[in-house]
Structures are given as C-alpha cells and as structure tokens.
Length: 49
Image (tube, rainbow, N blue to C red; front, side):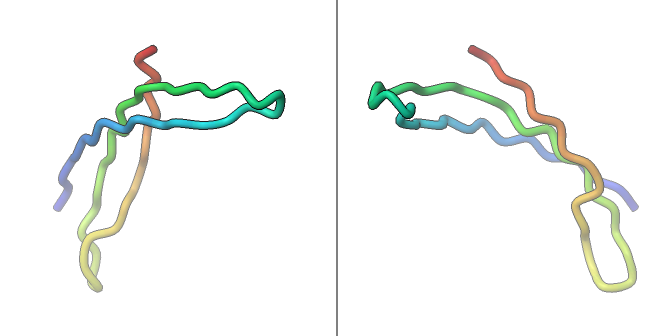
C-alpha cells in the first residue's frame, strides 16, 4: 500500500554574519508499505516564504 503525509515546519537559523532568519516550509511525504513496515518513499520540500 501507499500513504501520504504533510507537515509544516518553521526553521529558525543564524547566518554566518550573526543575523537571525526564519522560514516556513511544508514537507510532502509519500510512504510505501513493505514487508518490514512503512518506509518513506519520497519527500518534497516546499518553501512558503
């Protein structure tokens, strides 16, 4: 079987020059069921800002 999932991520980071930044993204995942359970088959990163 297959399944899909989605999660929203907020990343906060510090640049090399010391300034702070952030971004919001969505991870779009597709899973496949194998003999040992569910495995992540693909992941697409969509940056929102």
